[in-house]
Image (cartoon, rainbow, N blue to C red; front, side, top):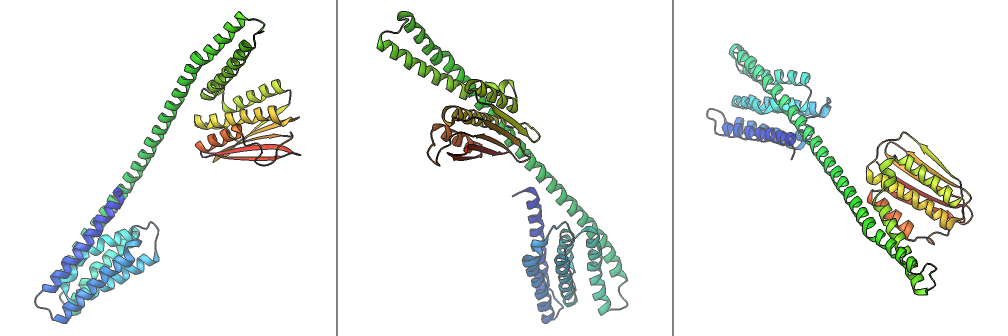
Length: 377
């Protein structure tokens, strides 16, 4: 429960306790006919019921609300009936005034508080037309005290709401700091693993290849040739792991620059032109999002080079206020739906799901393949 909600509940408890205490006082009061006590208790019970069923949901509305005003007018009528039956019910003002300030805007609340304090005066005038002088003085004092209490209530509730908002913002900031710290830790661990793989496995495979070739430069021995091929394959896998764990391209360039470099390298290696278009206003993305987008672009270009036989490839990186979208389209041979769900596309889907992204693959043997990745930001 927030601090603001706790404040409202405290006033709810105060309202209920006051209503019950006055009802008990009315019930045991001497000098009043039984039917008057019954009428007063019925009015008090109706006030309590009306507040619980109708008034409570209308509390603390910032704008003027007709339903709240009508509810308060009904409460004041019931209050007047209770005071008319047993004047001791005037003490209900302690419960009525806080509720007035919680349900309507200040200027209307002030008018209703004045009206509520004049009800006992009107009742006294009904019974003794010439004896309301002291009642007017008491009403003036009660009105002043009620207004002070009401304004203090509003100030207290406003401060509680401000503190609740500040606490929410602090919690959000703390969660963001924790997320950034986690991302930094993940990035550091990935870099450490990449270094370990490079310094151990990759260098080890390189040494094996060098030693075998030194022993048999022509690789005439079939077993040695197989050993070299196996070592080279595993060296390539090691380098791929290093590249996947440590996005070097992003360490020295922005995401658009890294995408352009990948496209340029693709053109140089495959001899296929690859156009790159960046749209929208570029903004900073979390590192993990940039890594997913760059890896998806690289994987899509790799697939286009190995399998598509494309004559042209187009790459789009679109920045939108709420998302960033990567589209890689080639005019190659394409494939039937579901026919090429290999490790590459599966890996892209897995990475996309890790950042709440959506990967869409559209391919047709006649028109080529389009891979689209959209990630909310």
